[in-house]
Image (tube, rainbow, N blue to C red; front, side, top):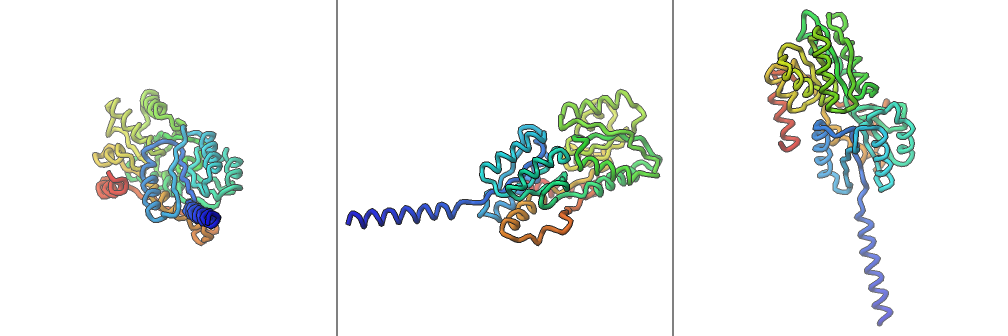
Length: 315
């Protein structure tokens, strides 16, 4: 009887252990390039996907700072911790190819926001940054029929998303008497982003147009113009949907903003990775590009757009 009881207990423990193993969830991670309010919508998309993917553990991760080295170290930690697939918005994709390939050799790797097509990533899901830049340029053309001189502001000058947005903007304003004189980078240092605008206002009074190419740049432009008493005197074209940006569009201080859809990056990205792990590659196109359209927001549609944003982030 003692032997029988021991066998029964052992069998029960194996059943319980087997249940525990069966309940272990695969892990999917979304890694962003820096801490910014912009990513709240992507995080909301990941949370929405979690409700539909209960068999997975979804993670939304910020690096300690917006550097490629810390991002790549974070991905190494995720893989070591058992993460099964990663989607990343790289701070410096061109100089992260080796790191990306090291990760991609261990788990499926996807990119968003800023692509690294030379790497072994599976696919990119995000905006067409060239198309978004063109839309920004079209706002400038419509807002400045007599032409003008623009200064641009961005985080990482070498990032593909920055290069492509700038190229698209220049393409759209060509022949319209509008010149993008220069673009100042700040490496996602918010204090530097503000000081860049202050410096331009002090040194270049002929600049009558400013373009904020990253989500936090337009609010810093707004702060600097407000402090200098020049709100409404400089045409501002923005990117993304920071509350300050949307408020400036509403009051007419900004001509408009080009918004992306980071909510869908998070939501679709999680489903894309889950499907891929389950053997379904039908969502990955031959060119590896899954484009989520961008949209122009101006005074005519800003209220309706902001209502959607607040609903998504529970605001």
